[in-house]
Amino acid sequence: MFCPPSLAARIDRAEARLCAGIADHFRHNVPDQQSFVMPFSGGLAVYAAQDSPTNKVIGAGFDGPVEESAVARIENEFAKRAARLQMEISTLADTSLHSSLAARGFLANGFENVLGHPLSHVEPAVEGVKVQPAVEHELSTFADVLVNAFASPDIGGVGGDEIPPSDEIRKWVLITMSLPGFRGYLARIGEQIAGAASLRFDTGVAQFSGAGTLPQFRRRGVQTALLRARLRDAAHSGCDVGVVVTQPASRSQQNAQREGFSLLYARQLWVKDFSAQKRPSENQ
Image (cartoon, rainbow, N blue to C red):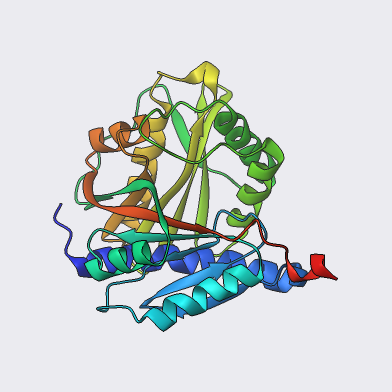
């Protein structure tokens, strides 16, 4: 599957809207977090809450060179909140943005791969693994499965963030699943729940978000079954591309490529950490 910059911009901006949705959640429910969403070079700069994994810049750099003053404004907002600023910049974005961030003291902190599926062909369901949408009363179970799966990662690969505590994982799973456009799925082997996964729809882009298999059910086709079920739903829902983001050379990337995903582009992660500074409320 070929990916021009226009498709990369669509994909990154879909993720930007997801991050903005989480910031909106905090704005409406926990206003003291100083959440904000700011346009930045065609993408968004998002601060949801202290230590949120969605505090980032995403979708930027597809509209040509970025003005230094725009970067400075974003830095200032994160510095005021004593927050770690991560800019996730596509390899298909304007190359001058990468050099500009390096010159401003951002540190290169690895990469993540964005893989895409054209949804034109989906393999049949995996025998012995049943995948069904998670209904509302199963949401707590859905979160438990992902928490337990993430607590014992099976991803390998190069780089990646440190696994957060289980209560933090559960909190973010429940917040994310409360947003519009998400569907949750549970995989069963016999009568036992073996894994869980989620999918988000955004303007023709199907985002394959969190997925995990419980340790005792690994190597039995659960991830493959979850991928195929979501691919079918994405195709039937009118999406033209399915997208998954993985660590380079990880088991997740390997599984996705076996199911017809191909590498579209990478994002370089640029970090400037203001978290050592005191938040304004701490100076009073």
